Amino acid sequence: GENVEQHPSTLSVQEGDSAVIKCTYSDSASNYFPWYKQELGKRPQLIIDIRSNVGEKKDQRIAVTLNKTAKHFSLHITETQPEDSAVYFCAALNTGFQKLVFGTGTRLLVSP
Amino acid sequence: GAVVSQHPSWVICKSGTSVKIECRSLDFQATTMFWYRQFPKQSLMLMATSNEGSKATYEQGVEKDKFLINHASLTLSTLTVTSAHPEDSSFYICSENKLGSPYEQYFGPGTRLTVT
Image (tube, rainbow over all chains, first blue to last red; front, side):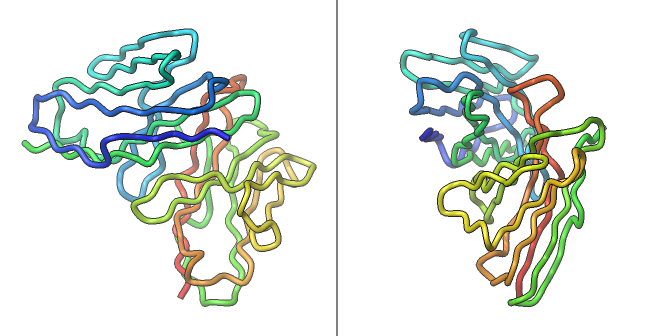
């Protein structure tokens, strides 16, 4: 089955800096890669996603890149703000099996 | 607005008792819902896929007789934790696919279960 690894587990940055979180996946049939932000005690919120037919996607300060050959994808947050502090999860989905597999999570702390 | 609701948002029960968690689709009829479990400071793990009108599909290592899933209507799936033990204490979250999309999932607000 699919296995998703995520690094780093914690990331501390200063406000205004960029943050990068990386994930690798094992199943070459996975074709959808969402990123979620989860605040303490809350549900995961989709912040950006990318499909396997696209190499990069950007939405304001957030961007995601996908390298299908290497089976890895990354989340880039620019101009970080304290309110970006949360736990971020990557995930991979094989739409044939409809099973979303999550990475282990990255705790991002943005200091003012 | 929210498209998936869960009830209760939190529950405390005694060891050995059973607890039922409801997951409702608010905006459309969902033939498939997903149940996840998240232990403190850990990731979300898929427990089972709930299919309307048929038996749920459980992930490896999840006891189907302990975690009973019923999806009797297109807008309601329930998860019953039977004979709960302290190690079942966790955050339980359901989700459903966005209407017309095999990709994006909407998550419920979650249910915090504490077993004493």
